[in-house]
Length: 404
Image (tube, rainbow, N blue to C red; front, top):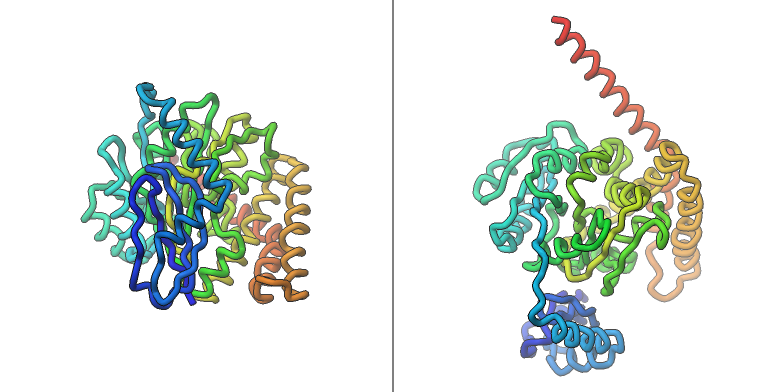
């Protein structure tokens, strides 16, 4: 049985929902106007989800009640306050040969754009013109990065951006109408270099999607927090957010070269580029803010084999990130972070699976992720060599053109 994902606003009247046959339960995101409060799990019986059950679940949660009280008090105290001017912004969507997913992403972005910023779609090494033809139907800019690599696409988007803040998301995401202002308002704090937000599942229709959420998904919680190098060791930056929902000061992206082409999709490193960007921001002494009010909905992989590949890639990407921190930055805490994560996450999940503990994960998925970690150092070295070789070839070609 599947899980129905939905959201309700506690400031409005909640109605019963019918026609939910085939769903066993609901995962309900609770809001107080534009603010995100938390979530509750509510059973669905005979295709019916009762408003009374949602209210009961919300009232039974101490965290939800506390946050609602806080929101009401905050709303009263903030009346009449003038807000500072938001920075200019550019949303960058990196995509490759997935126009059917990109279309729903663009629809949500265009609906969320109040005209104060711009949207750029970076088409990364496309195999056809389908994405370009789709983008032409929307009021967004189109750019093409011929070399494969998600980080290359991110850097191109930053170079083309007109905004002071570059906001990144992926083509398999649908954004909330309040997503952009929720991210921008956090840059008002001192030395804030990046902001991340809440990423919820768009749907939980298949076993693979449910399993991904059991792994932890992308959700980082429902409380705002602020990190710097004193409160969080930079190698642990992956705990702050993910590439589907993050924003950076453009000057930092460009001056620091935050997104290295040796990392993430399109390379043998597979992932890790977003974590490395957040790591650099922390390591340079800037703050990162996480706010659950900046909400997006992510479409998880629907089939088991695709999920296996994703988890294997996450294992490789995380440990290529740790490898780069060690090789390029001589960051010994990265070694400690890698060993700690391997013990606390990978080995613990393997033990739970072997002992068949409640809600244990399938052995093939656990092993796939562990195997991904073991090849990570070699993957990073291969990726780095390939990038160095490409740069050398380009330099020689440039010198020859100049001489001619």
